[in-house]
Image (cartoon, rainbow, N blue to C red):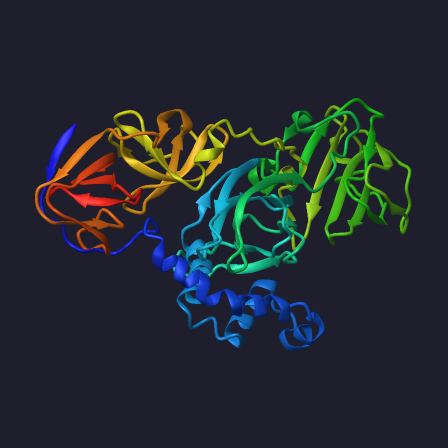
Length: 461
């Protein structure tokens, strides 16, 4: 392919032009070294900042070192806010290989839904593990998109992991951000575990025959628990460690046990054939506390355990018991593409909102459209399009920029732009007759490489 190029106009730059970014890197390096060393004396800082998070304390140190007024310092603060505004939507179990450029101020956030009673586990690993500080924070996403996310947990900046027990249904945001001028390849793993052990020995959630919220007494009340069917005499187990609050029988539940766990939740075990614990006894998770029966108002039904959980009222205990898969799908793409620019290899390549073939399509790309590969997960790349749109592309629909797809001849003076936008910053200018390798196309712009290897965009208009 050979096309002739007209005159371009200056614009705003994408990180393909590295000179300005490198200058920023050198200017703040000495100050950041001082900042890191000053952070080693942690006791006075604890007294000064109290219960502030590691991320907040680091931002305050940036201000004290007068780095918050530098371009890179401002970018670091802005990146933290922007990540929460534009999170990546994922579903557990999730494992992603990605790259944080140490020359840029970067942050990324992952949006994940949680149910009351589920336990979230997040682990960050860098390769190689150099021990630099990574700020790992968990926020509850507001229902109103204009509201500010509420922080619920922060990991120590050297721990690189966190665990959180959800006490309400909702969506949560996991944000990671390294300290200034640090980064590299990393892997983040997000899994969701049940917080309670299944309370009937040898059974799982497939034994549940009646769910929470089912109508009772002709709709006059609702079922505030789960009915788990098993043979009479099957051991009933403590779903969590705690202590027995009561074993007093009642008309509805018959032989019952009230147990208070370490998370201040109250468990209710009803319709037992017999009880083998007493009030005030401390129990460990998995201890036998009784046996399945049909006492109380269950005399006319097959033996089963009614299991309920209360905390500021009853809630559905199913998510706290259900074992979701915990082994994420292995990344099957090319790890060498992560952090680099690739291009799609087929016409009408679909970009999806989430790493799933059933998720919404956010864009359709023509063949040879360049994309920046931000991360890889399972058979998907997380990519950024030339216009800034982010989404997921199947790994089999991309290819590396191993060679040009054609050549361009400049017929008049034209600019090399950092973005495919007439208003972008020009980082170079080509004279008439310049031969350029074309690596990709996006709308009325071509992605090119000049004789010195510099990448950028040139307008065809």
